Length: 443
Image (cartoon, rainbow, N blue to C red; front, side):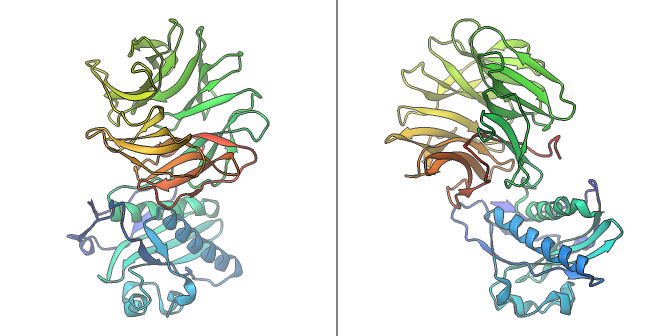
């Protein structure tokens, strides 16, 4: 069960001012929003009011309302009501709670309503944005934002983040990015897009095979596997100043993953002769061997507190998921269903691990509960579905799929497996998505 909570004002790179009285939010009811069978909430987002009425301001007002609707609809918590059904226009009646006839919105089924205004001041844009609960006649979020016109998308996402924190207790993922591998340039290179697939940009340009990107917790570093020296080695790259480190010991060096909140990684290395999981510093120095088994151990992924690591091992005869307590070394098998389970990713917020499972000749995405060891299948009969990665709030899973003509593309779905849709369009095939935890160096 998620709770409404008061959202404090935050100043990022633009001015934000709270315009809702705090007492209006005190003691607000709770809603069940984590239910996988939750009915989507009908939401009305009319065009924002242009205060000066200039053509440029009208354009910004219309684009901003569309962006609010698209951003909130991406969460899968809302169904956006067609504007043709609206019975009144806040641009004419006013955007304040006292100026709105809420019956006109409840009559068309709206449970929530976004209203707002826009004004342009030289190179800046000023918004007043409100989220209104139609049934309770309460303003849940109401703030004034000022920033550069070029920051329009960031400001809108900031408002949507505050709406989501008010509704769910979590800020969401609107400032996160997704790294991925694309062979569109002719070789497998690392790309990064914003959380919704917007603005993809190329990170590597080495004309070799680059694989398995992984974000540091602060979004400043990417670790990945590269064949620049003819074999798989680990590269650790700072996205701001291009500093970097290389781990190129003999053998194969694969599947890096950052330990939450630390400048430390785990990876599968074979310099000792067998592929085992090791801990490394962010500079690429080995500090501890975690696994030691007769067969390969690969694909590590950390628990949210960094105290445990899940990985894939063939020690039981087939690739299965195991979980190790790092301090004690105690290890237990997690999956028993299926003969080939791989690419685990631990949820950043709870005790669930998403992974790929080979079933009836195709890979499907499953989620297993670490405590009960019960797993749930999320994809079905739609090509090979692999490499799941969680959104920072644990509400969505991105993954690669060959469901469209056999070419691998990046998709996203809810943790219940609903609302599966393509994330972005790029030439070639896209694989190995990795979702950052928040603001990244490219922002």
